[in-house]
Image (cartoon, rainbow, N blue to C red; front, side, top):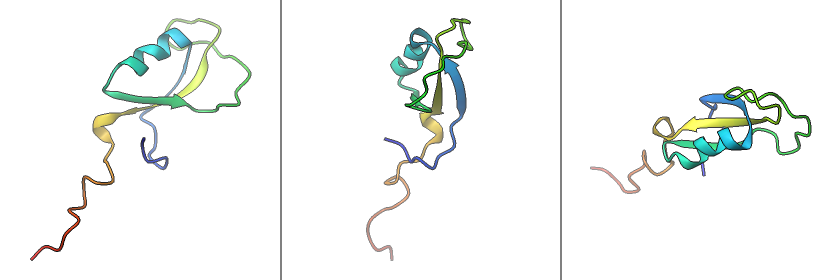
Length: 75
């Protein structure tokens, strides 16, 4: 899970088929921008009229909370 305060690298409207490309790629973290969205938009990749809004982060730009803390006293 990522820090929810992190600004997404991409905000796209995607159909389920195009969103699956990002879901299956280990380099990205993707989640729906609005789980209550009921109005479909055009997919930005394939122009399918059944797109939903997604936030996408590149995992290499995200820092884990543990990556910057050594947990011990340095001397």
